[in-house]
Length: 186
Ligand SMILES: Nc1nc2c(ncn2[C@@H]2O[C@H](COP(=O)(O)OP(=O)(O)OP(=O)(O)O)[C@@H](O)[C@H]2O)c(=O)[nH]1
Ligand SMILES: [Mg+2]
Image (cartoon, rainbow, N blue to C red; front, side, top):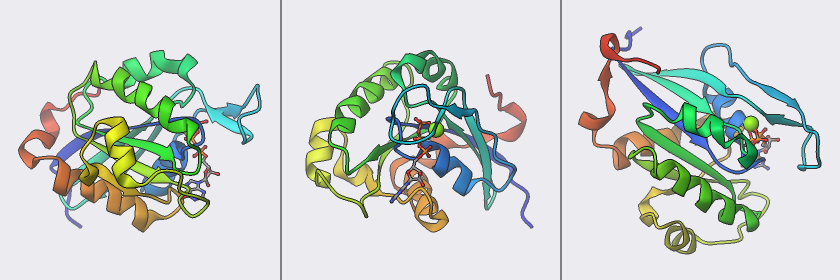
């Protein structure tokens, strides 16, 4: 098996219930770390992330470190500390929940004010419903339509496709890869 020579820190952000924890869990080839607790208010599911999700995935000579952050805006201090050093951003948005695009736009602005990294927008839950098409999402979030992809966070092939898109289409490799020896998580 090829040992990875490079690492890339990828941040996974987006509104509550967009599938961030599921995405990191689905992709991880090492034991997945989560910080989910029972939600204290109605959010449409039982548990919610309050710290970070962490998982890793080796792809060829690259070791991908996946950091998922909480969706709730009251935990935005976690976005702030976790985004430091990220080399790419996966912003997940549930495509069947129009209100989530408003929140996603705020999150994207928050992160873009702090880190200048390639981003892909992963539209989850499109099997349940599609409220906006790619052009509308691109215009609203001010990203190129090529950055937008549908993702089923429960499906490893679908998650891998979105990661490959981040690497192959959006990110010039020279900006992405950091020799493992010189990489620091903080
Ligand atoms: N039907 C469907 N369900 C999906 C899809 N992607 C994710 N899910 C489900 O949506 C839910 C997402 O929950 P989480 O992964 O906890 O969401 P999260 O973004 O981590 O939420 P917070 O941590 O609370 O911000 C899970 O039940 C997933 O199984 C999809 O493409 N289709
Ligand atoms: Mg979560």
